[in-house]
Image (cartoon, rainbow, N blue to C red):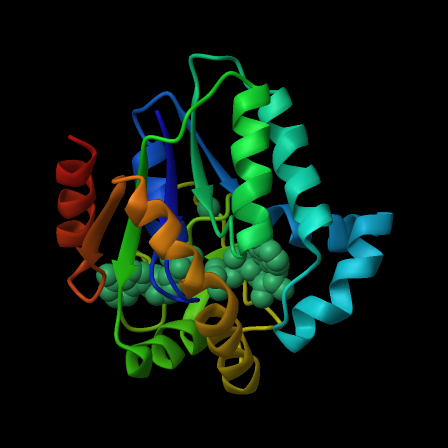
Length: 214
Ligand code: ADP
Ligand code: ADP
Ligand code: ZN
């Protein structure tokens, strides 16, 4: 199965992708994570992307589509793909169609996480992750069970994203509205969109996604 998780920054795409991967033959393909890894490693892609990401604008379609293509090339046919944060523009929708066809895959579902914009700043400014395993947390909505220790791997190191500040979030939301929202009608015409209430608690969102996947 190949699915897209779609929604504005802070909607819960990463959280739900991590949950879907657990116990399933699926891999999370997050272009945001791939780009952050490239920035950290100082690759040519990372050098190009760094300032754009810090401003909250979109990185070029070619760069992100190449990252996705390369990642799919490493995956066996039995492993499903969860696209998290990709595609984000009409160009990326076309690129993904072409890439999936080339890898002998088809798109089964697009899950749209519906959220109030007002809640997003709150979600994003409280977000942090485990520096070791990447498990996601939130200052109020999901603290580690044992304070200061990752539930998943026991690490005591956590990190916050430099772009998770209110100013950048506003730009990212504007980018979403202007460039990503408009890709939905195309997928709607294909009859593969399922809408899920992203304002519910994390477990309820997970159940709703399970149901939508059938
Ligand atoms: P995205 O990948 O769409 O940007 P994340 O999954 O990183 O969003 O979620 C953003 C923040 O909100 C994280 O700190 C996460 O723990 C928290 N979060 C995710 N889903 C929910 C939810 N349903 N209710 C409350 N907080 C949530
Ligand atoms: P969020 O989880 O908050 O939605 P991401 O981690 O997906 O954010 O993306 C962080 C940043 O990386 C974006 O603001 C953008 O600069 C860049 N980025 C990630 N995915 C894409 C994409 N598909 N197209 C263009 N830029 C991207
Ligand atoms: Zn961890």
